[in-house]
Length: 170
Image (cartoon, rainbow, N blue to C red; front, side, top):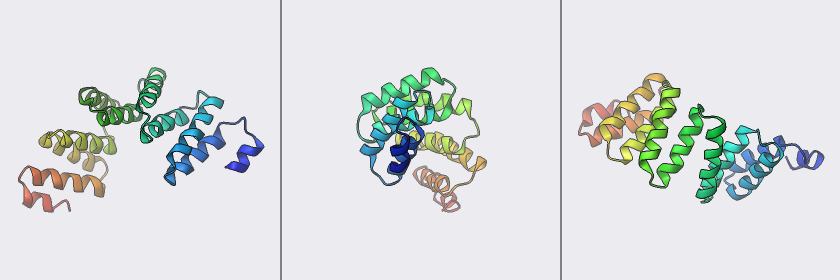
């Protein structure tokens, strides 16, 4: 990507691609810089802007991450993935009521989102709302069975004192 940037430093795509590659390597601070440059070059690049918001959170720049998410939501209020990611930030910050509202609105927009149901189930389980979480894990599995959702459902069943039923999902 550095070669592509050297040839056309005015384009956003090479910076975006470099940011993604850096994320995959766990080099988050440099990924933030790459996504910032992508957004500077093309403010309409929603993918780069969302990745920037997520990486700002990853490096602990929560206020900037939230500002970025809010800006994105104004531009794309019906983007379910954006709502989930912003909800995750708010949950991390302990703002559970706001996070739950975003998760619920995201699921209204994408009701058959298996990953969304699994994420929301994890959120509810962390709040001690295990029975409710169990329902979302079951929905996740019904839309797209995944090992993670089965494991999460099994753990929820153990918490709910349903050990025999939990064995079916390991």
